[in-house]
Length: 302
Image 1: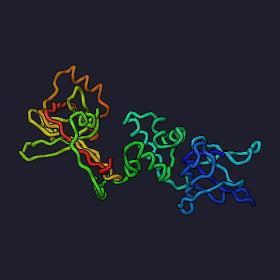
Image 2: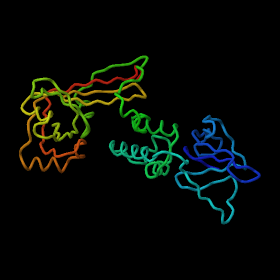
Image 3: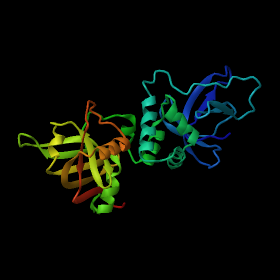
Image 4: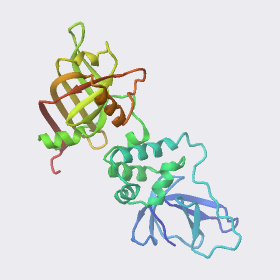
C-alpha cells in the first residue's frame, strides 16, 4: 500500500464492504508512501496516526483509482467520486491556485514539489471541482507565497491588515533593485493625483512595467487622467494576512500621455490584461520614476 498526501483512506465494514469511515491522508512517515499515515477523519476532523489493516484501501484522487492492501478482484468497479456531496462551487479554489501559479511563472511540477504533493493531484485540484483539505491549502499557500484566505477567495470585502501583528516584527528598507523586482511586470497599483477640484485622490489602476516605465490605461477626463503633465506617486503592495507580513513600493515621477500610434500599438499588444472596470479606456499614461523606495515587514528571525 502506497499513498500520496491528499489521498483518501477508506475503512470498509467487514460485513457489508461499504465505507465505514474515511479521511484524508495529511502526513506521511516514509518517503515511499508506505504506512503509517496521519489521517484527518471526515467525521471528527481529528488527525490520528493510522496503520491500515486489510479492511482499508486508498483512493488516489489524482487518478480516480483505488489501491488496496489486497490484489483487486477481476471486474471490480474501482470508480469513486472525489467531490463531497453538497460542496458549493469548490472549483474556485483550483482556479485561484492555477491563476496564482501562472502569475508567478511557476510550473505545475515545481509548485507540487514546493507543496509536497503529487503533480497529478495538483492537476486534479486545478482542473476539477475539487474540495482540498485545510492541510493541502496551507501547503499550497506556503508554496505560492499567499494565504489560505486568498486561495479560498475569502475576505474580498474586507480591508487587508486586520490580523494580529507579529510578536517580533522586523521592518527594513528595500533597495532600488528589490523595488523594481516587486513592481514586476503587471498588476494593480494605486496612483495619487490632484483632482480637477484640487483635492487629492488615490485610485487603483491595472498597470504594466515597460522599459522601466509604469504604464496604465484610462479614459480622458477620469481621475487617473489628471496625472498627465504632473508629478505623481504610484504605490503597490502585498499583505500576507496569515503570516502578518507584507511589503510596499512607492514610485514618484512625472506622468505623461502616450500619443505615438506605434508605441500605443506596442503597449496594447504587450498588455497582460484589460482594465478591470471595463468600458472604453484607450488613453495610455506613462510614469517615469525618479525615485523608488520600499519597505518590507517580516519576522525578526527571517
